[in-house]
Length: 479
Image (cartoon, rainbow, N blue to C red; front, side):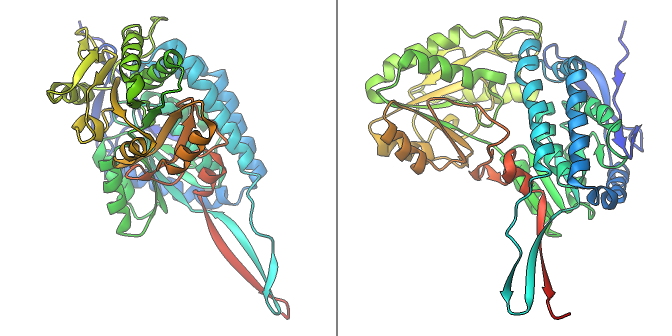
């Protein structure tokens, strides 16, 4: 006897709609491998409708005061808190994440980030007006860019949606947001909650696949395209947006080096790094999954890290003892397994290295040692619960190995030597450098990388400014 699947719908111009041509895709719970809903497979007509709605809404929303936008975002934050259990349920069904950790580690930061951008709406700073030419006064205006086409990933569907819509809306833009085709449920629920606060057309959600995202980026209406995703996806977006010179905001992959020096507290560092590497099944662009450890403590550190891995548990969302849930989809399970299957002969699997169970897409916490700098698993993003370990001889070699990848999003240094930590923070070519910790983020500080990790910042006043444009106004004093 089959169970009827729940029907998710697009949210366009203040109302829920099916795809114009009626096409849908099934949405699967990765903890069970079973479909629980259908979502629209949006086409050109749906993209057109969403963009038209956002364009209609833009002039009025642009002309609201910062105080009015702040008030709306604060209401949204309050509503998210009030309906937190509904959001958690949707996100857990989306992702298979542990219920308790979703409640404690995602809802509070999301709400805080919305409230931060509500305040940022009233704190735009600029140069003071002045006379830079005789008889003329110049001023600088900060304005919203317009309609923003945004594409969110599947690893943190709720939180990444917040990172996108909150600064955009706070700055006076209107939004068309597409969640991943594998995780639309929580974003659709967000639209329902936000619909009672925002004027129609300010926030629109369309579900769909890569083609839907491509249509959004290539559409003539948006002034800006923002994506969090893979390097390949980011390069495709940049290429498409270049055809009409759209502004582009890209947060892409990562391969964070975790540089552990010989004066580190080995037991504590191994415990903290394993947590930062395995959290969310390693499906995090900043995950601590590439450890570089000084040769003098290499063996001891690897043993401690392997022990931490064997003590880390993955399992179903309602199990309070698990650190992480499943990989998001069958393709991701295949990708992670493939990296392990293709390991070179000199590599050694110290822990894990296999799928867990035959229900859902679970993978064991894995530690791999004996690796070389040019190995595939060192150079490319695994995006799974796999921590690699290499050894280095001195600070210069540590920097060489750390910077020797195409990614440049995040990194960390583990040492008791303050001067060394400061030198390393200068030399590491990454958008974030943590010292004796890895993965904490706060709304006030920017998140974003260099090289093939993309450009533009999320969070912070810098992230807010990315959704604005600068206009010079010059006035004659003789008029």
